[in-house]
Image (cartoon, rainbow, N blue to C red; front, top):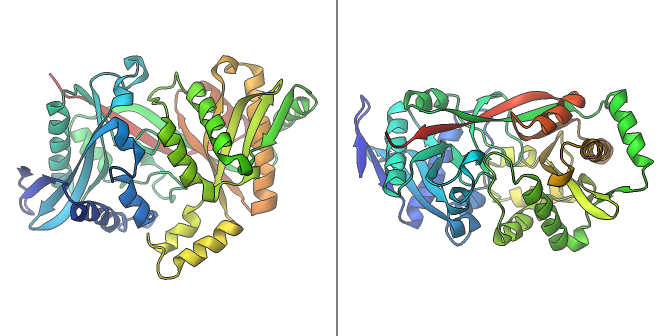
Amino acid sequence: MAGSSSALGEVSIMPVSSKADRIAFVDVGYRIGREDPAWVPPLRMEAIELITPGKNPFFEHADVQLFLARRGGTVVGRISAHIDKLATAMDPAQGMGPGTGNWGLFEAEDEAVARALIARAEDWLREKGMTQVLAPISMSIWEEPGQLVRGFEQSPTVMMGHQSKRYPPYFEALGYTPAKSLLTYELDITRAFPPLIQRVITSGEKNARIRIRNVDKSKFDAEAKLILDILNDAWSDNWGFVPFTDTEIAYAGKKFKPIVREDLIMVAEYDGEPVAFMMTLPDLNEVLGPMGGSLFPFNWAKLLLWLRNPRVRTMRVPLMGVRKRLQSTRLASQLAFMMIEYIRRNSVERYGATRGEIGWILDDNQGMVAIANAIESHVNKEYVIYGKPLVG
């Protein structure tokens, strides 16, 4: 047990050890989140699944401990401390590597609670032999990495985090410094791309060696495996990269399947070989927002109707990748522009969308930043992953 005092009373930190504790862990996230008008409550069943061993395959390769903060018997905050064994096996030059632990799923009513929670998470990581921490990461790097530092007024799109603007000063006061920035880019998809980009696309359409195709949902498992194989190759040198496991591929496919639309996910083939992909998802948060995290009593019917014919304002591009051997080539950019353009047209004509959000993108990923700039998008949100040594 760990504790700290404040003018508001003693804060005690206890590990989550039961189903009731996990429910309390989720509940405090909803209670604090509702203070922010831009926050979108996730489905409660998915929030519980995320932190439940045997449900979330992250637990298969990670040590995880959840903690609750209480003051006077009331839950006033939460945090997860975790060590991803796939991340600690990576090259330290890519950000993670041996001795790197994380904390995330952070919520706190005030600074005293934040200090107590983070101190307990750091102690747990030290006890496990960790020498540095990168945070917040909730919980996998593929889920909701980083603390929002720009764009607080906008609600998050599907699968993106949204944290209180109160938190960055708390982290910095405890010695955390920015390790990496993750950016999302917004664009008006009702506008055609600049003439230069249109010429690049037209040139690609005349090249018989290039084929851009929709995914085939009747072969969903095979298509998901193909896309994630390209992803693992394309992103393998990126900062923070951790490979997807086979179990995670199956799990992600199951979660994505209800909102996957064949005409919003493209695969680029060159000489008959799949070499690139772009995944776009209709912004599910637009329909989930008013539901308050629950599908009952009638929200399930509303969701089913929406899934049959989703009409949205925003499309999100969470993932895009080109095989490593083609990166930094003109062909890579050409394939990217062609996929973006075809999905842009489909998004507007078939789903009524007017806005796109691309990301996250590492701020030093020059290739992706150049593509985002070329289509005249602009940064609308920034998330920061902070770092801190745990020794010395």
